[in-house]
Amino acid sequence: MSPPEKELTVMLVDNEPARAAIVEQAMLDSGYRVIRRLENAQNLTQAVTESQPDMVIIDIESPDRDMLENMSRLTKDNPRPIVMFAEEDDSKYVEAAIRAGVSAYVVDGVQSGSVKALLQVAIARFREFQALRLELDSVKTQLEDRKVIEKAKGLIMKHQVCDEPAAYQALRKLAMDRSQRMIDVARNVISVMELLGEKR
Image (cartoon, rainbow, N blue to C red; front, side):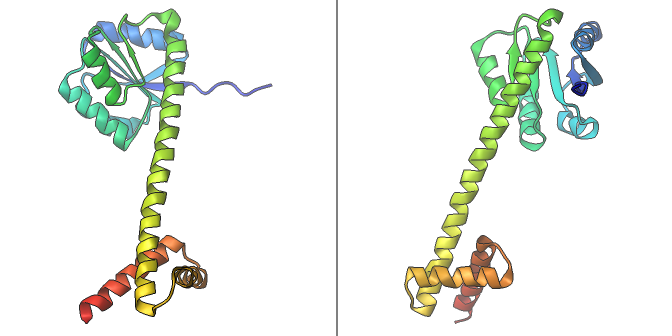
């Protein structure tokens, strides 16, 4: 028998109590629990850090610049799936919201029958985006690390008057002897060589 699904928690941003109550009920009917409600997105990142919801639902007429900035900050510092229910269907608002990190932008309001499927799609899109972002970050780090290692090799070649394979072997041996990563040894080599250069 498979374990029961974990109840997903939601932070709701809505400045109208009556509308918020409808959204909250729709969430409950779909198996989600609203653990906190904010009237605006002013302290969104802090509130998410404190409450740790699984996702953020924003129900508004149209996203203003402050809200978009707060969503961008959240996406950068503490990413979560964000679903926005809005009345504004202008493409520039939709594009701005997606750029700020919204996983789903819904114009026709909360329909309790379709909420669960919609939130599941938003979570799947968010996970896919996060995986791509991690992959991109990893590629960037590898490129930056390679540049540092190349620089360290260049300095060793110049200092010890040796060829590239010999400089690489010297770096590799240092890394193994110190039980350190190659990148850390390369950074140390650069620091030491630059210090020696300054003292001359």
